[in-house]
Image (cartoon, rainbow, N blue to C red):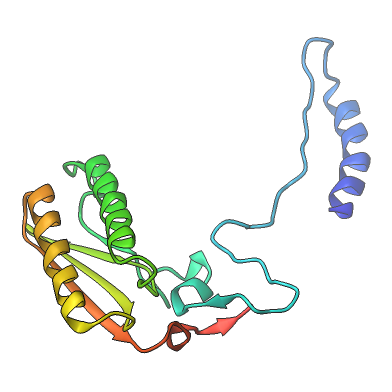
Length: 169
């Protein structure tokens, strides 16, 4: 950042003298923001924040080391319903997070193929299997009714949430 200030203080007077700007026009400069901050997690002092594999990879690795959280074709050029699909994906994620309260250990992946929606997630084994089967049927039935297409859940279970942790920062 100091380099940019030094360069602008040297270059700006030279540019004004060479361009011979009139009274009505001006040259505006601003600092360059080279820091990419979004989608990254801040390191804690004690390094005790757990990250999954998806969270540990920065956003520029999407398509290389990590995948998209929504698989659909609505974002292609001239595709139908791009905004409705995005809103439905947010609704599905919030519904599953609320229905499977404190059980979802990873990101919820939504895959749309033809007229079918497949939802994948990693769930903790903290409840009785009978209740888990009920929640699977309940979630599939309600989402199928609301989305007007068949919905299937593809769930993986882990014994503890620590089994999903990739690293601590």
